[in-house]
Length: 188
Image (cartoon, one colour):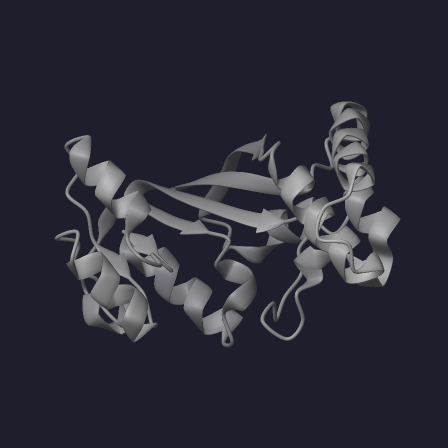
């Protein structure tokens, strides 16, 4: 189950790799594009009440959810026992976030309603969700830095942004505070 499936690319790739796929995407235009790929997405997770899945993914979606607490409860109910939840979110403790401050593109207000750190992510889900591992999204620092530099200076491309993205990843080698992180949880 991919929540926030967009135009269905992740579902399509998963389906091509022999997974049974389900997806949720509130944007009608995105659902129509996915349907052209034979990926039929639902509008809401409410459409799956009572169903459970082996894996639930949210790729840069959690920060957009207006009713975070109730949605997290609903997401946890979608997981089978021993099911895996994969959540990718920006990390406001990253080097690039600290460098760009209010210009950091991943703040993305008002579209991003929530901002997460490793500490907050470890406490966000119920005690029956065990954090298995955290993985970096190494290329996000470059993308976010390019956007941040544009917001800060107006330049649509700047070598400095690539340098900041590089420095962010170098810094994260010791701090583990990458620009974006993937959290892998397992339901008890």
